[in-house]
Length: 480
Image (cartoon, rainbow, N blue to C red; front, side, top):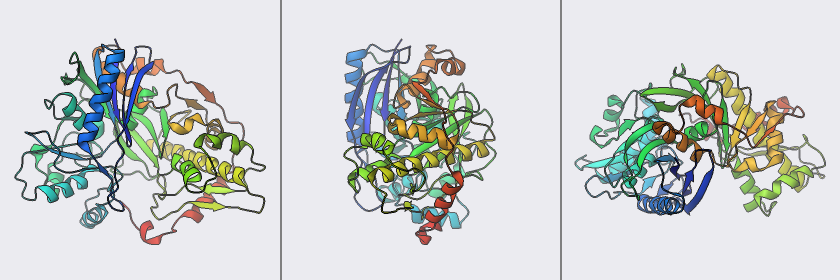
């Protein structure tokens, strides 16, 4: 009763077999790095991504199969357009980080239409204007989940799940279906859109794989991580600390009351859809997390490897004198200031490598606490403990700083990337391997729990953030 999971991330595709006890085995990984043909442009080679997905899926299945079903997790909002008859992409895919549509988003905002450049809607519009200005071709649109299902089903299925559809910018605010007014405003033919399906439920078969196992689960990466960490009851929350960081809290069957962004900078999301019913969540975002450690390593040369940061930070002679605000790409939740910039404060002649590295880890931890506080406020729910996954959770010094900054227990995922486990749970529920969401919640067993040991100075932190804001006023004025 095992599940094959294919997970398409920002820089790689991996596949693994997940056992009924939650063990993740036979992991195969292929890099699929995006390209940057111009400043602010991020493009994907959809054909190469499809080939990599088939390669890793077949390899994992050959080693660990047979399996009962296939689950899919994916980076959200990246946009691919292909010819329906040939299955060939008609243009480079546009990655979720791509900023080429900022002018279009600002123009739409002036006309009362609020779309962010990371959503799929304007990416799709610019692709269509470039390759089919008269809207005469028979084309398919999809986010990466759609493209993976199309690939694995041999072109038989053109679908997306509710978690991915809800972040395209093309659905009604209650995620009930595609928004005809938005489609008309962007001149997007409804015929090219995928059918919206449940996140957990059999939708067809993966005919491109040996044994043609059923395709039974799919979700965007953050929602998959939420389910993978057992956050299936209202008030349970997880944060994924990778290049950036996302915190998601399960809210329940009722959609959050705000339209697009809450008072404290969070967004409503569909956490998953099962049996035609949505479970909603609230999401908070940090734009720079692990990328700050990469900056210390690659650009400043203060680290030989990211893993060195743990011990080096412990060697700091003092703590709380040097402050770092991780705003290398601006600030996300709760203030959303795209013109904020990374800020290092409190340097003295005695501040060395250890103190700077410590300040960076503490700064990311403070930002994590910001996300917790904002999500609590916008969700109207107390987050008693925070579950975490992602590359930075291998760093014990960071985990302790996060517990101290947030004043909450930090429960560390037993697997570094919980997206794979979440996609397996969604597929497994469709087949009865796991009975329901309560069964998944009961399966949670953290690798460790880190309790707060001291209180960090949150007032000083907020003062540091204020000094980082508005560094580039023209960008600070942007609001999507």
